[in-house]
Image (cartoon, rainbow, N blue to C red):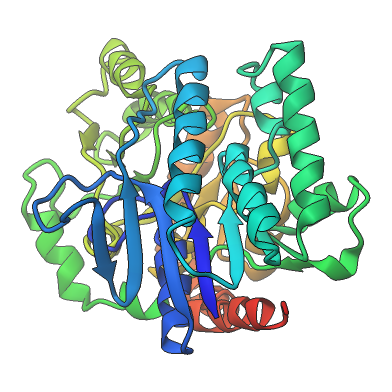
Length: 400
């Protein structure tokens, strides 16, 4: 089939961020499908000519639309609408048989619905976050009109989709609550790329030896976005308490986002900045295995919004793939995985002093750390990229 694949934030392995679409689209190509990826231009390298490149067999159209996480909410909305317009224009130049779109943002549904209507193609829609629930819950979407339109768009794209892919059981339940039958929904969470993250032990040692502040000290890693919903200031407060419990423990934050300056300011104010907490820019998927192989434990944190517990955090599955104990501060299905498999544990959100003491106890218990490492590696098999990619391909192939 000739597939138009809409993903506003498509990344290749040499770029920071999720590579889910790259991995799944690459495998569609290997299965004989022709994939046309419509995305924002993020990579400004000279290798991309006329906003087009071929990435592992995927035809990628990099649309020249300005977007930044530092934009205010309405600036982002304008960018989303501009992307939709450019995406429709580009898609009309491409011969196709099926339309696939992956959120967020929810506005990715606009070009998908338009092309479906014009071409009469079946539509497969992938839900990565429950929009507009999340922007409403965190107070970013307040306009009564925009809330109304967003809910209408959400229902329209669900109704129009022949198949819907949800990244977690909670998301699937949210979709069903809109009247969508269960048999039209397939749950395919983010994947653990076990092969990519299987690196020699020496790799982590070499990374550690680059930094005088690290060497053989315990290392807590957060690798991901630094936005409002991520709530990484939580780790700053833990680092503050940890400094009095064990000044040798190091925290490394690898990422970027709208809240980065505020987080650094808080780290300075609490006395941990470049003493026990260090910051580096986001790393690509190619470099991430090296970083995580140096970690003692990996973390995934969010602010306490119930809707966010439905997420399928890439950093959670990357940590498992790297065989590292996962430390989170939220409930939901990922908490259930950690507790049932023994691959990590949950810290209390409201009491960072208690959370620091719990983390300190784990870092002191080398036997427990080793047991959690083994459990993490074992759990990663359940979410292996090859298994989930095959499920994705079967879902696409089932659509006629």
